[in-house]
Image (tube, rainbow over the protein chains, first blue to last red):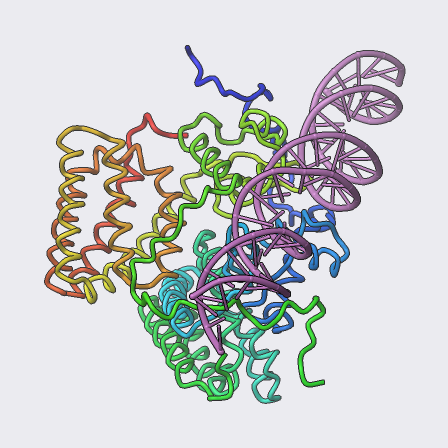
Length: 245
Length: 245
DNA sequence: GTTTGGGATTTTGCATACCAAAACCTGTAT
DNA sequence: ATACAGGTTTTGGTATGCAAAATCCCAAAC
C-alpha cells in the first residue's frame, strides 16, 4: 500500500485552504466570537474557587453546578475536566470533582518551578527586548508602584501578574509562556496573602530587573529574576499566621 | 453572616472521612479500577497521532471518531479537549479538532523548555538520590545501552523516556514532574528521528550524569544535564533530511 | 458503644436523540 | 474567474435515560 490508509472517512487533503497571502501583517482583527459555554463555565468556577466561595475539599456535584449556573451538565463536565488538568480540582473516578486542597508543600514546589521558568524567561527577554518593549515595562512598573502606595492589594496582585506576563511574552517562547501561564495562575492562589508585605522589596527588584533588560544584560537579568522569585518563595514560608489554610 | 454562604446545596463539612489510622505506611495497594472511557479514547487518539495514522492538519470529526472507536460522542469530545490542552490537537471554535501541525520553531521551544526543567530536575535528584535509587538508575541505563547495541529505535526512545522520568521522580517535586511529563510527551513526537544518530553520545552522557548523581555532586549533575539536553536540541536541528514534516 | 451489614439513595459515566447556529460545499449565474 | 444562493455537514449545547459505583443511613449484632 502506498498510503498509511487512515481508518477514518476521507475528508480530503490535510488542512483547509490557508488563503491569506496578502494583508501579511495586518493587526489580525479577528471577528468577534461568543465564548464557548464551557469556557464561560470554566472561568466562573475558577473565580468561585479562588475567592473561596467553593472551599477546598468541597465536593462539586455536576447537577448542582449546572443548575446554579443555568446550563446543562455537559459544559460543566468539560469545564471540570479542564479545571482538573490545571490543578484547581481533583477528579476522582466515579466520585466526581473536589476542590483541590492546596498544601504548603505544593506551594513550595510551584514557587520553585515558577522560579526556574521565570528566570529563563527573564534571560530570553533581556536578549530580545526592544526600546518600545522597555517603555511598556516602565508603564507596567508604574501601575504596580501606584497600587503599592495606595495599599490596593488586589491591584497589586494584578499588576504583578501583568508585569511578569509581559516579560514572559518578551521571551518569544510560546511554549514557555504557556507553561508559565499555567503555573502563575496557580501561584496567584497562594500569593495574595504575601503580596502586601512583600510588595515594597518586590517592586524595587522589578526596578533593577527592568534596568538589566533595558541594558540587554542577559546575565544580570537572569540573576535578578532568580533572586526575586526565590525571595518570593521565602516570603511565602514566613507569611503571616493569619493565612494558613 | 458568619459564613461565606456557598450558593450550592450544603454537602456537609469539607472532605470525606479520612479514617485510616492503622496500617500507617502500607504500600497503598489501591483496588484495580477500570479506566474511564474518556481516558481510553484519549490514549487511543494520542497513539494514532504519534504514529501518523492521523496526519497533522487532518480534521477530526467527532462522529467519525466515535463510530471508529465504538463509543458515543461524549467521551470523544472530552478526550479531544484534553488532547488540546496538551498540544496534540487544535480546537477551533465551531469547527472542531485538527491534528496539531508541529513546526520547527515549536520543537525548538519545547526542547529549550525541556532543557531548563530537566536541568533543574537533575540538580534536585543529585541532592536526594539514595543508594537504592542509584542502583535503579544503572538498571535503566543498561536497558538503554542494550537497545542501542541492538538497534532497537522504539526501545531506545522508551528507555530514554524511562530514565528521564525516573530522574524527574527523584527530584521529589511533583509539580515539576507533572510539567516535565507534559513537555516530554510532546518532545517524543519530534524525538524519534534523532534517537538513533544521537543515541551513542546520549547514553555516554547518561553515564556521566548517573555518576554525578551517585556522588551527590549537585553542580556536576546540573551542568551535565544542561549540556545533554542542549545537545539533543542541537541534534534536532541537524536531523536527517528525510524527517521533515 | 462501637462495629457490621444491607438496602435506599445519590452521583457519575456514558449513550442516545434532537436542535439551532455556524461553517462548509456546490452549482449556477454573472 | 466572482459572487451568490441554497443545501449539507459539523459543532455545541440541551434533555433524558440508565447501569454501575459510591455513599448514606439505620438497624441488628457483638
